[in-house]
Length: 358
Image: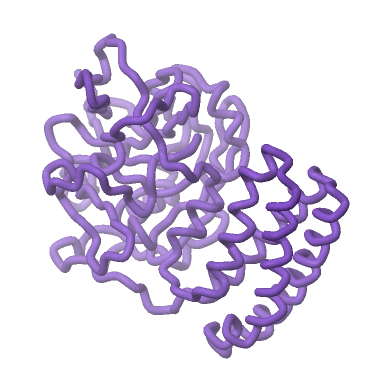
């Protein structure tokens, strides 16, 4: 039986090119978001608004280009500004965090302050490798503080028409065990609650265990989640029907999530979603090329390749729902081939944020 698998519409401004699974065509990869680090993408997508902590985050992240060019005056200036922020904005940052989390926040802040001081020292000595390592630790601690800023109540409304669908009301950490090695990913239920909920539901059920990679396209995607037998998705044991998840995408600074419509259909040709397909290991929810809203169980890893990303239009963003990022072990993706298998997907943290329905 023919399998329903992901279809991509890949286009440039000059020559529109269509690419569907099961057909061999030449296609160019769509351009990605400027930010390519998965942790940065996840920090930027948190539903928070604390300008001082964001300013500190931006100062450190924007040293990337200066580091590549060894522009130490710019690096040292950013380190000094970061030190100023950490020394002078403590009250504003910590007061924004719930009182029940203050002890944890104080410990993280104290460690972050020490690391920022180390950054200033490493920058003055022009020690690039040490600066990069300390910056990585600092950004992780900033991410930990930002996570504490998120309110307990889920920040977005999910339409009642989807009450029967599972949802992830927050984030989950997962381990993906494959025949070529293990990867860890963060699943973002803040910005894709229904897509993430369907994925976590199936992972907890063991649905993905032993399923093969059913599509492996170099520089494009790896896809899995196609069950054995004639089915092409997850069959709900109660309804005996294939469960479908609507296309679900958030735009920055918008109150409502977009459901059941692509950016193209809404005329949003230049927008970038909160969770963009911008880095190796972006997790995307597959649907057929006939229906944006018939995704059921199959998902894909986006294989971003910077050198093949000319300036132009990215029609994957806004046509498919991204719902997380591989944060460790992304090198495994280049080793996986057709008929390699997902041994298991384990939910390491966040199952308490999963709900089987509204």
